[in-house]
Amino acid sequence: MDDLTQSPSPKDGQQGFSLIETATALLVMMIGGLGICAVFAFAIKNNTGSRDRAVSLAVAQQEVERLRTLPFNDAALAATPNTVTPTTLKNGGRRYSVLTRIVDTTTSSKTIQVQVTPLSNADAWAGRTVQIIFQRSTFTLGPYTGGL
Image (tube, rainbow, N blue to C red):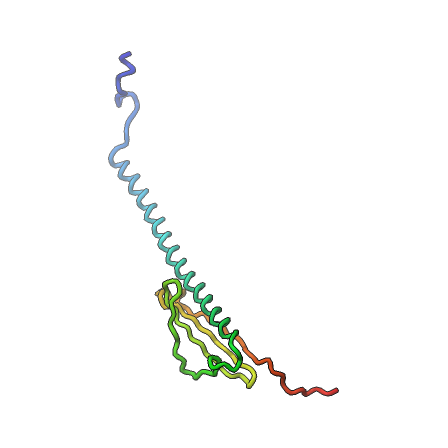
């Protein structure tokens, strides 16, 4: 019974970790943990930039759809001068600059350009402008020039 109650002694072949081995193991785990933290920070930054670009495209598409629903002779579809002031809007707590240029191509056709730039992101790649250009025309019939 005495053998079962005694704790094993170091001379039985069992030894613990030294302080240096423990410190080395903690250092290796800390370096790995810092590497993982850096990857998470990089992923969060790029996800935010991607979201800004996606919302920029959605804002541009909404503006295009708004302009498509207007009658061709509406004052909002009047040709704009070369110096157009952009409007700023908020979407999802982020700010975006919206610039719309309208050019009368012919008497029955307009070229409309919508540019949206995210203003809240400092990254160069995420702050690039999204641009949609489309043509708008009337439904009036032109003169018939063919012969029968």
